[in-house]
Image (tube, rainbow, N blue to C red; front, side, top):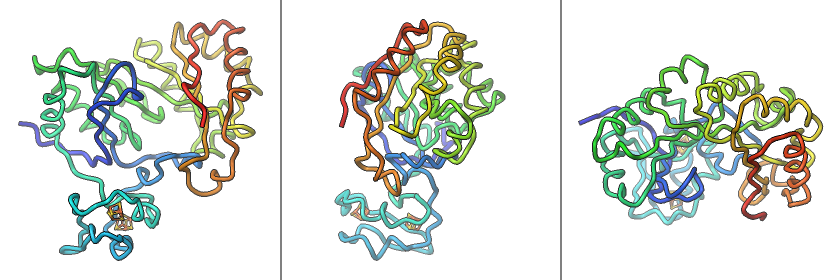
Length: 287
Ligand code: SF4
Ligand code: SF4
């Protein structure tokens, strides 16, 4: 019985877009970046039970009990009104789950999936939970064949990765811009630690995927293609996935940004391939 808990924004038992094969995807609440292009901005903050969203719920699924906001799952119609209202970029629908709760979910679907991906928000912000969960999976004969992946922004320092390494099968890391100033403008943080994490994980054989998100007129990969190509080449044979920004579903100024098309993404793929990057995956679709 393991009672260590995490704040969870969502759990998808079968996901085909969060790593290889069919996987249980667990989304942890809270992030240490503030990406303008985030498609799930309500996963950034943690609810402080201010109550501001409660009267706005059109289906009376929210209430205040003893100073805490509670969510009635059975009444909720998933209209997302509360998400739009929250000044903390949080959600009243996040739920506390223990490691044991997640193990029970995993056991119910284990025969149909290849592994688990823990995403966010930023999964590594709840590192003790992550460590306990992955250790429990590796130690359980019924689950040990499942791969344990993390989908991360790469801000975890090396000391954290070192702790996770023995129970981590791989990390998928986003490099949201090459130049630190560009990264800062998009996310609110520079990218020195992100690049360091990418290098360290690759050297350990734990970099499952490097992801580049193309935002027209915003990301700077092509302006720095020689340095980017050299960096990726130095990582060894690492799969690179190119994602295309789409404005649908984002908040704030990014709503006005142009969505990426094949004409924006394919030149980057060609430039990387011409610099020796072998495994480049293009977006499955453009919106
Ligand atoms: S979800 Fe946001 S608005 Fe609602 S109670 Fe929590 S912090 Fe306040
Ligand atoms: S998504 Fe939020 S606002 Fe909409 S019904 Fe559910 S709790 Fe209420």
